[in-house]
Amino acid sequence: MALQDRPSFPERAVVTAGMPYGNKELHFGHIGGVFIHADIFARFLRDRIGKENVIFVSGTDCYGSTIEAGYEQAAANGFAGTLTDYVAKNHEIQKETIQRYQISADLFGASALGEAGEIHAALSATIFQRLYDKGVLTLEETMQFYDEEKGMFLNGRQVTGRCPIQGCKSEIAYADECSLGHQYNPAELICPISVLSGKTPSYRTVKNWYFDLPPFAGVHSLWSM
Image (cartoon, rainbow, N blue to C red; front, side):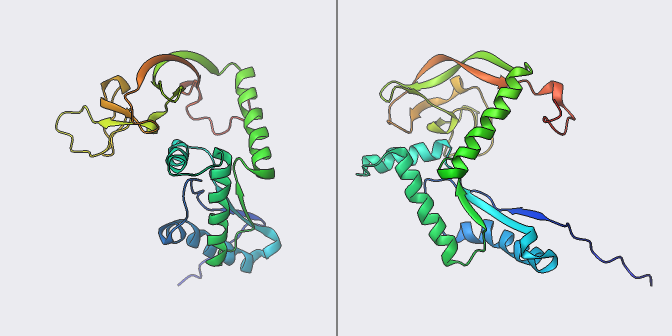
């Protein structure tokens, strides 16, 4: 029986773990479902190629409609800080939790806070500017739900209602997709309600930037543009 080749390892490695939203504390499901697997792999690679050649990174995701909704609920229940304060508070709690579980992350940052936030903002601006300069971003006019009481447009997860698909048994339907995966036009959502105010939102025209995807089918990197 021929001997199998020994496994090969990279000279250096970056290990990442999924970034939890900044609207909550972590529970064991987060730790067991996201961090433990990555931590085991990071420790394994450190043993094989040297700890100086491995960096294990993760952090708090500071962006998302669930964060805004969580902040609104917290504010209604007496939280006196800003949205940034709310995310920063949850970030510190999350950071303490992974430390208590002895997760060996080299960096647990936050996508909108501190130095990590500054780097994220600068890199995002660079990417979008490059796409704009190359003419692959298009400004299009569409319809979007608007919360009159809050004075803001709502994204897909900030509106709930009933799924318009006949026979659907979903208990939760968002602006364009229900919890069972049915997709539809937002205007078809039955009894839409803003999760921020609890009121029926209006439907307004809005302009957004869109990335023209079809011409890039099969392209592996935009950095070559």
